[in-house]
Image 1: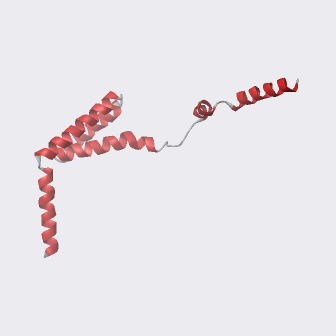
Image 2: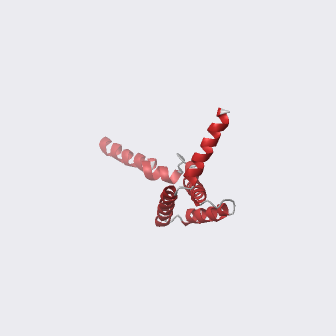
Image 3: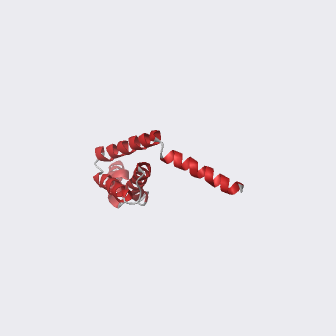
Length: 118
């Protein structure tokens, strides 16, 4: 009997959180800030994903807290999750810029050695 009572308390608590106006305004502020960050850094594809996920989620839920939370999570996973795959990978051009061209170093050192021998 206690197990069902705990489940009922959880249901009441989650229902209270999902219908709280302060939580709604807090999530709304986070969503607007997130869209502002995406727009100011020219990540318009992430903004579009945010809006499209919000529209699609509104077909399944009428709770704005749920809609905005799902939109925030999916847009951020889309934006920052794609950057995790290429972490640590560098192509040859980036390595040359970072460490300098080794052939140029050899020529510089070779010229100095020849001058010292003369």
